Length: 132
Image (cartoon, rainbow, N blue to C red; front, side):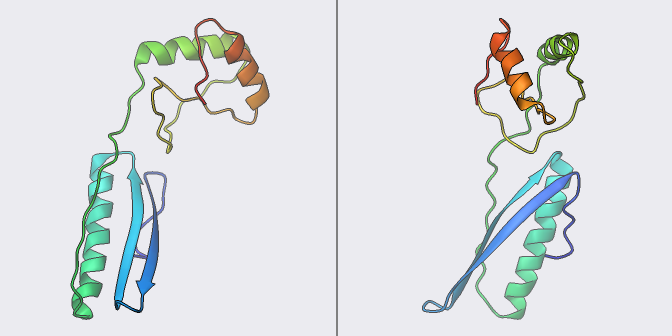
């Protein structure tokens, strides 16, 4: 699977476990992508590579994919209000995607190295709540 690009659109990690007693090998991992086409392309490459290796070694192959979550989109009104509040408080504001899943929250904020100041600002602000 060395032909897979870990780039700005796709990230992956795999772990291989061998059970000598049962003469079996398990490969498990995670593939993350910002778009469905990138996810499909990467999963296709992964499954083709594993299938080819299994066929060449005359192994029995069992493969499955589980989708944990869909990409989340922050509501524009929330993003705009947060950006204005941060900018008005003197924090630099930029926008970007996040590789991390944020449960039960409308948006995630990166600290850019100013975690203590940002946490203090958000805790003291009437409109925002810190969940993590």
